[in-house]
Image (cartoon, rainbow, N blue to C red; front, side, top):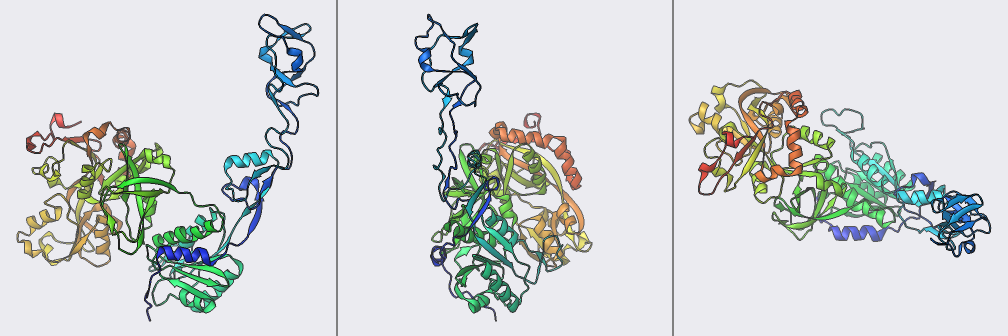
Length: 636
């Protein structure tokens, strides 16, 4: 029987229960100091000897008795006959209490002449100046930094005692295959526990990943019993949802106590917390983004509570580039791409599907939407936790619009130049709205031939926007994709899937329909609208539709038949003044470079004859005749 979530524990209550139910284990290990970066000191570290142990020369020169230099001046040079030559770092011979730099002396036959007296201790590092034997170097709980390691080595500390936690990680699922094995139909590579191990190891934990356990109650029980016996914390991956083969909750209850099953967090609702042998057991959801959330917000939080180094977080206030909705009563964690446009930081939400792991790869931060909030309007200010070096934000180009693999090639080249392209798939309309509120640097747009900037009616569709420029990226073949060859005269007999309607009209589908089927009602088998060409091709391959309009690249990726109908123009729309922005100027140089064109040509589905061309549109609200496209004054 399928189980149901009868109640969900709130994020606040779940964290409170996690933190208060399990006291911190006092587990330590001694490691070489050169491997201690980022670890937390378990016991105070004291200096084994004084540094420096004797007084040392701080300059090259002569060691002298300061009383012998009294009276030296510009008009009364003195000759020092009692001295010792020293170099920087040499011990000061007994009886001498100052060093005169060699450049402040003049040698003569009897010694050195000086014209300035020396003060006691001048240019001398006294014994114990750095640290005295027995003094504290690092306190308990200190997170070790790179330069701390240099000091520890100077003070003769070769090994250091640090905190650690033993974590056992159990992957479950009959559909899982290990890393390195290509999954067959219905199989997936086991990756969640790899992700958990890397994340928690970086905090100072020692993670042990057990072999994949099939969906068998007895095998899961044996694995959990073994893991809790030898670890301080156990993560069990998958098996925490409400499906018929999810045995984790039952097994935890049989071995110990289930504290809760289901938390009001998205993604991550199926998470569970149990106690077996006084050890916490966290059940991870199977979906990658949900697992990431639970690893970061629960497992990571517990290790931090137990005294390990916290995962790095850089908090930055940003404004939302697009509206964001959220389910009331759920704390939601949202992947976000952050960039700086002008003087303002903007955050663009990435895909929120729990399966879409690329959402966090493409993002450079995440935001928390609290449970009492149903969402935020565009422009709302909130905090984002960066998952990258904050300095990269100043070199980030934020794009909002239609995503295409051409941007991936451009992003590769940009990264070589120290630039970062982050993009949100908001469609043509979303891209223009982002431009309107200046929340992105540029908007990548897919413009059908019939709606190109030179076509009548285009300016009116820009909703009053003025002075736009369009950087041409490439022409992209669009056409009919299908499993079997189709006849243009029999379009009304097919089940169609289409990309969602966007700003520009008529769409390619409408054009095709009107040219080959004058009776609009004849194409009635439209099964639905999806968000991209790739989704169209996937729907056809999966049998949800017979045909659809998509790019040649998307069709060929799914090994579908393809009939070319037209070329869409893929272009970056931006405000004309942004052409002077250093980031955009750099991107334009890359777009116009031969390396970018060659990268597109290797894919074999792009037309680069106009790549790098700029078209300008100057649209006045009451005078669209000021449009400048296709004329010498409108082209660069």
